[in-house]
Length: 206
Image (cartoon, rainbow, N blue to C red; front, side, top):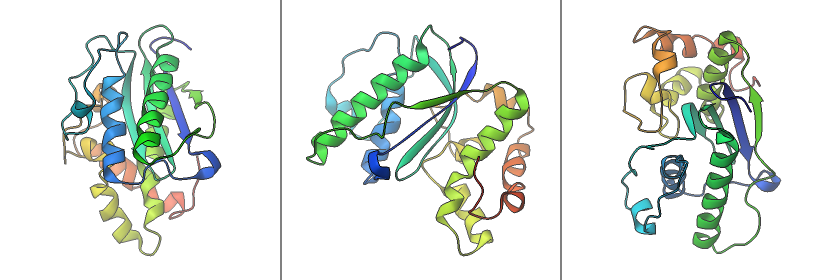
């Protein structure tokens, strides 16, 4: 993989099973995105990852994360590789660490994810922009009965970086410089939401 290039990285549960069974699981995964994003992993007591607080931001990061979404049985992340082999190191640490946590908590053994994560190189600005929109629109599939309700719910969905980009929260995981240089404050929200009719409500695929 090439440093300073963006990649679409995604993975899902083995046999399409859920990889998040509670909000605590989702919080743990997001905190791990910070903890494992260092070239040298600093040992921390487990309770620091389950008390509701975020670890400190990476001092020597492997990747920068432009956007993400957590769904029940899969994850999408758009990230830029910063360090050599940064994507591979980050995803291996994240997958291994979260699987150990999940298996211990839910009293299970074996693989949690279907396979090694998949990644696709982002080759143009147009592809990057559409990809971030696709990632942020993933939760719309959870609200299939009414498009207006889906739009409202999408803007409140807690397990995505979309709320960060529309000013509803400050997400410590996200490096937003790329998108913020391309859009005015309300522009990105319109860019994402205006695509819903074209997408085919709750049906389109990347």
